Length: 95
Image 1 (cartoon, one colour):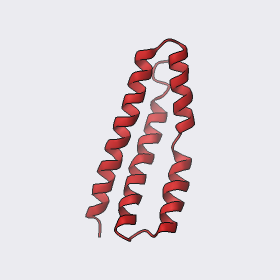
Image 2 (spheres, helix red, strand yellow):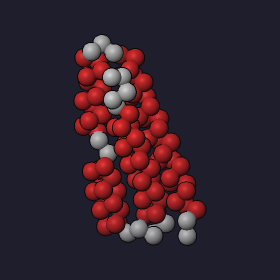
Image 3 (cartoon, rainbow, N blue to C red):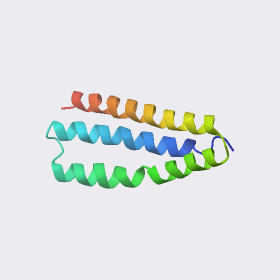
């Protein structure tokens, strides 16, 4: 029951990775602003699950599972940032 939120973290980290890659490609002018909006905001926005993440954190705190909520919050933020960072610098290596 404690790990029901793992699929949400996975979806969010994948979305962060893709968004970082699209941002990098946009900065290199490989992806134009319309493509970035379509893929970054549209696709990644649909893939990631902020509302589910928020409800999961609410459920954990409502069940007094504060440690679980804290770990979930921390993992989501740290892994999401690492995914964006890695993808952005990977994208900078592409021609």
